[in-house]
Amino acid sequence: MLEPYNDEYFMRKALEEAEKAFERGEIPVGVVVVINNQIIARGHNLTETLNDVTAHAEMQAITAAASFLGGKYLKGCSMYVSLEPCQMCAGALYWSQISKLIFAAEDQQRGYRKNGVKLHPKTEVKSGILAQEASNLLKRFFIQKRNLN
Ligand SMILES: [Zn+2]
Image 1: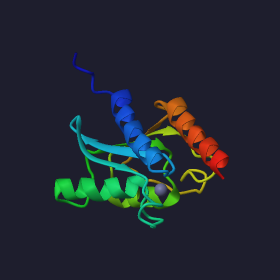
Image 2 (image 1 turned 90 degrees about the vertical axis):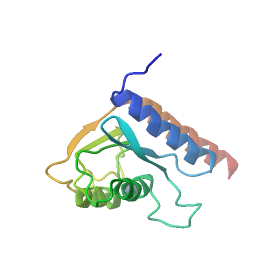
Image 3 (image 1 turned 30 degrees about the vertical axis):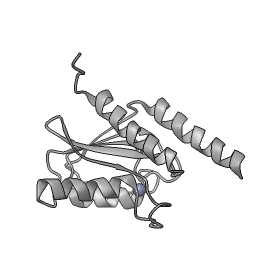
Image 4 (image 1 turned 45 degrees about the horizontal axis):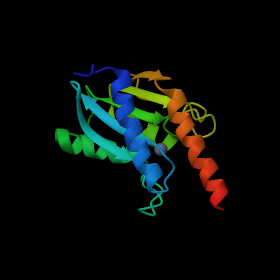
């Protein structure tokens, strides 16, 4: 059966990326970048693995998508990310001029909105798609981490 290409479909792909981060012991955040219903970049948080505070899922996916397109701007692209981006990633998204940002769970503490960061005026934002699943995954991660320490 063909699956419909909709926000939920692509957010599920982002959650699959988040699961990969979880399995590596990374805070589970995952991303896909889509253009014309085609996934052109995927990413998951790798800050521990790479010892790099900039290795957020979004940063990697922005670089990968630009490289795929052969241009620095992500016009016509939609980013699906399982957690609201932080100010660093929102800043990078601003420069990319991405057309659409769709995130699942809100980040009350480190989210870009709380920190007063603005996206590009051309970027359309949607939130709450599969938010419960995304935040359950994060909760599961932090509970497991607490029990290991
Ligand atoms: Zn970030």
